[in-house]
Image (tube, rainbow, N blue to C red; front, side, top):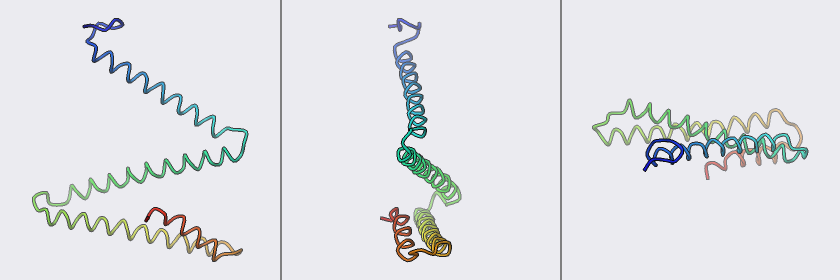
Length: 134
């Protein structure tokens, strides 16, 4: 039957309610982020920004990977599975080499710009960045 609020079937009314609840939830989430980054405790502010930074980094990395994967899929031959597999393997090797180069340059940069306790600081810095490798 029709929805009591609008003269459309129930499915449309449920969809509208779902969208409205998602919008309210999104607004509540953004307000909680504003509260967290403007908190009186400086540690809370720092950890809030670190969590936001990590979240944006993950979403950006996924978006970048999906875009590059779509480009590789576009140029890879669709009818030959072996060649497509080789394209995918090449893409994996590319990302692995890029990750290792980023870790290396980060460790070298850290070592060249800090003088106090460089070895342990560089080690832990590179180790914390390498956690993504597993």
